[in-house]
Amino acid sequence: MNIPEDLRYTKDHEWVKLLDDGSTALAGITDFAQSELGDIVFVELKAPGTKLKAHEVFGTVEAVKTVADLFAPIAGELVGINEALDAAEVVNTDPYGEGWLVKIKVDDAKAVEELLDAASYRQLIGA
Image (cartoon, rainbow, N blue to C red; front, side, top):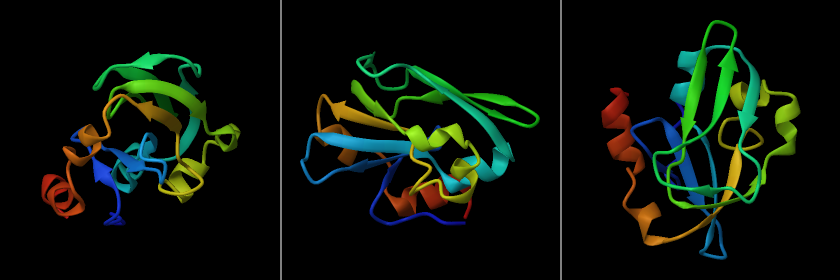
């Protein structure tokens, strides 16, 4: 199970990476989440410009046998979506790289640090 040390995680199996500008973050689903969902065939996300509250649904991911809600890991404004998601299987093959889902202008960068670190996330999923 791939759990990069430089990311932060939620109990809902999303990851967050604060970018170098300190106010924007990328977010996606974890390797654990994509493996539990199976083959992802479609991702639907709210439009850029949407204000997000932490833990609020910001989209859905559809796999062959299920549809799951995506929850905002932090509060902020959705400022970008990953155009590579037209080929939704990229979420399965590279969930932390090309398979990122959204870019968020964060309301409070400190909120990112309050999320789970890699060790805590490993413990959560029993890895």
